[in-house]
Image (cartoon, rainbow, N blue to C red):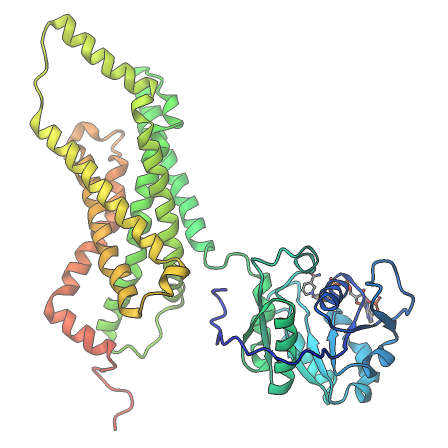
Length: 461
Ligand code: NAP
């Protein structure tokens, strides 16, 4: 329920027990499912249909009449018919005068028509009070009772009394009405069921692109290069080594990309000297999907942890350790403990553990059940301050782990640097720019701009 930022006031239910007859036009899948649910909730239901013959599919407690006869029996009429057939309502205009018409329809494409179906219905039947509702609930969910994911019913309409009547029905069916305001909101409500994870599209496509890039990059460096130059077959790296390289790299880059738009927005605001100019569309969209970017990053970090846990039981790793021991025995020479290496390895593990812990904390606080229980300042503290701390720890974890290769020319293969070096570009850029923005000479004007101050006011008093 991200797209529609609702006035999520759940309207109060009607306390009276007596249920009014509800008329449903259309005995199709949705009409029947809704009728069945309403009968269960105690509403007398009458169907308006082109054919008055009842079928075994129609609930036997309901009457099936012609449209005109059925409409006269109820104050509320649910139009469970596709928009393209609404013309049949024109001859019924007089009968429908003053009635509440509930538009439940959806379209096949986003913004398919210039006006919403509900507004079109209101134009066709001018004397009726049109309310948009139920379009986000499926016939299958109504029938099977599997309403967990779609318990919310967006309701909008211009007539408050009509909206309240529909809201009472929504409550009686065990659903949650969410008042979206006037009929102007209908188009957005109709577009809602047609969207496919809108906020997840960019993070998922980006992760797919980066995964593909880093997979082939690592394949060239770590499998093809040793095969060409040393005739060594490391193709088994594809199973664990390469994924375990890609996962931390993606986790770090995506986490940095969560904070990059904020930094860019600050630069734009400082440059323009005002916050009253819109950001470019791409930046707006990027900012809106930061939570999803962060959650995808957390998923990669989590997989990295799992891959890391299996390292000691890998055959290649056990072979490497045993051959080192054998070589020490054969040479009768014990290798002394390299203190620097021990420090580096313990530090990078500690940084990784702390970074992952904070990463998980960030993920948990972004869950609605948690974020709804903290105030705005607490949420910003966790997502901004702890977020940057996580980014610093994870960047340091990568630097300490890969640092030894960065300046070593032998780590370049076919002039390609180690993938870890590439993974540090975005996080280091974000952290450096953020550090610069903290300087009082930039931080002060930025704060003022964010409080509404303008360098060159557009409207001077
Ligand atoms: P359906 O199974 O195709 O039923 C549509 C009904 O409309 C028909 O059974 C018919 O009822 C009536 N009809 C068809 N042509 C007509 C015409 N020329 N004139 C008058 N009535 C006509 O469709 P549905 O799945 O029930 O969907 C109905 C509406 O609910 C659609 O607007 C849809 O977008 C919306 N909706 C459906 C679902 C869902 O899960 N199915 C979910 C949300 C919203 P009679 O034979 O009784 O006249």
